[in-house]
Image (cartoon, rainbow, N blue to C red):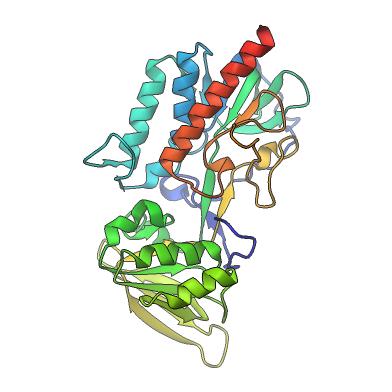
Length: 353
């Protein structure tokens, strides 16, 4: 769970784009349309899905089978964060495991098979003030939708080190539940000092031989209960006042170079031998572009009516990590995508009788 008391590690980049641009941050908060680039195209649709990944693709499958003729705009990273994951072993139906990109291609193909119109494009502005919901794509195409399903996900925050890109999928991870299994009996490190870092360190301690918590302060920001649990876990060692400088290894992470007491007369570099490097410094929900109309919590997660995917705007639904600060798993995202499509179908049925 994301806590407002997350360790305040300086964060410079986010995991949102592929290849060389994978860690480049994007700004979706600009709710103004560039007047020098007027709308050049428009269309009306019954169901618009913004974003892909397990939630978006599952919503598309259910919406298409309900004859909602869904149109999906995949966003900057088609398939979402799982496209940057190597092995996925905890998604039902794949007893031998599957790679993240392959899983997303399977879901995409299934959505396409049932008639989903899958397109490349980024939602840059919305107007949810009327009964018809307006969404601008790349600032020059207007889509007027009876229902909108928001499945834009949440982006794990990274430190901004080049080595995070270099070892992505080869020792660097932002999901202990997803990848911890691969580090059974090994030594690993968790970056952060908030509730998320504490929870992930405790979880990983049940799998790994040794867990280092790299904390830049001389105290944890986690709740007292979580701190006590960390202190009682024998194979967790807290490296107080340490910051990560770099990672090293031949093709995979084999260790990290840290700076202890940076900026003081006692500053020194230390190396630790690890096989895995887990980031636990928070997630940023990709909801900025809808905040003018859609209620979110203080972090930015979209608020939905409990037990549903409904937002505060009738006909607008949210699914996946953009509305889930707790679980953030592919299977829970997929389940919420199903809910969003079914809620959308029921909304339209009630609206049109």
